[in-house]
Length: 286
Image (cartoon, rainbow, N blue to C red; front, side, top):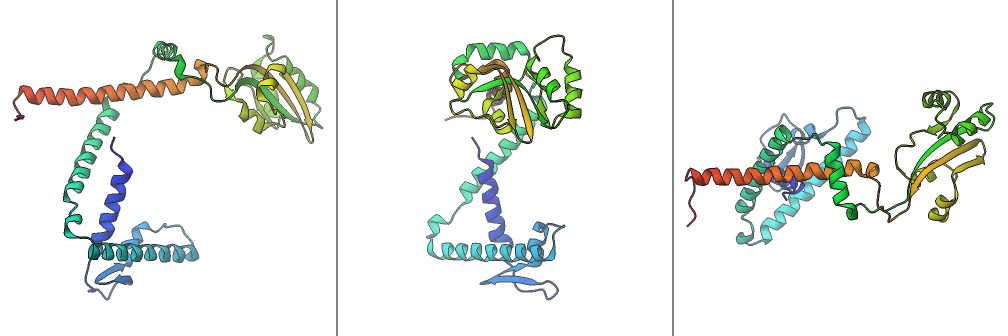
C-alpha cells in the first residue's frame, strides 16, 4: 500500500534542497542564512510562520527554522560530496513516487464519489455472526447507570432511589435526566450502551483490585467519598476474553464492511480497466 507520508517527506526534502539554490542578487530582501552558494531568504519561511504569534515565539520559531535549514543543507552538501554518482540518481524513484501518488489520488477520488456507504443492520449482524472468533473482548465491559451528587444535597435519597430502581418501567427516564441536570455533578444514564469498566473506575472511587470478582458480586453500589455520593447500578457485564456483544462492536464491523467494499471496488476497477484495454488492443505483452 502506498505510504503517503513517505511521499510527502520526499517532496519536502526535494523542495528544500532545490528551491533555495539562488545567487545573492537582492538587496531588498533579508537573507537569513547561507550555506556555500545557497541562501535562505525571509520569503522562504514566511508562509510557514503562524500569523497570530507573539514576537518572542516568532523569533524562536524563525531561529529554529533557520537552524534546521542550515543543518539540512550541510547534510545535503556532504552527502553530495561523498556519494558516488551511481547513488545520486533518484529519477527512477521519483518517477515511481509520482506515479503512485497519481494513482492514489485517482482511487481516493473515485472511492469518495462512488463508494456505497449505507450498511444495513442485517449485513452487520451477518458479518458479526460469521466472525465471532474475531470479536473477543480485550477488557471487561459493562452497561450501567450512575449519578454523582453532593453529600449536602437534599436530593441524595432521591438519587439513590432512582439509580437503584432504574430498571423499574414506571420510572420516566426523561424525568431522571431532568433530575440529574438540576442536582447531579455528573451522571450517565444510557444503560443500553456498553462501556469499558475502566472508564467507570476513572469516574468513581470504586476499588476493584480483581475486576472480574467485583463485577460478579456487585450490582447496586453506593460510595460516600467526601464531598460526594456515588450511586451506580451495574445493569450487565461481560468479562475479558468472552465474545464481545454486537452493540459494542457495531462501529468496528461497519468499518470492516466499508473497507471490504472499498477493496473490492478498487480491485474491480483495476480488472475492468485491464480487460477493457485488452479488448481494445491498447497494449501488448511480448
